[in-house]
Length: 155
Image (cartoon, rainbow, N blue to C red):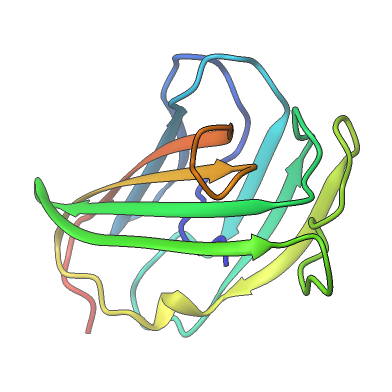
């Protein structure tokens, strides 16, 4: 579900490179100001001929994760390409391990990102990922701003 989270370590207001290769550069910033622990690792750092990325996530949330709605906004070369919303946690019969975690409790997970099957055209991608602890999207839990530069068309 967290297919476009591309992080290493949080430093407020500073852009951090996640990875760089001959075909891909990825970096991030947080779009909300409070400091919190968030780490993300992604391998391989490439969009070429890969069917799956491997991801590792560590996060210590600022509030309980009983309800979690994520909103993805993706721009490609400055044009809006995707706006997607999904409720991941509802408080009952949730399928994700992060659901039910309490404020200050460490979330550590590894997962495959199947979206790597997408053939990304060459260009600049900006991704905003927001997580809300309510359905009305008023209580922001996390906000991430990714930059992904695809240097060559995938085959």
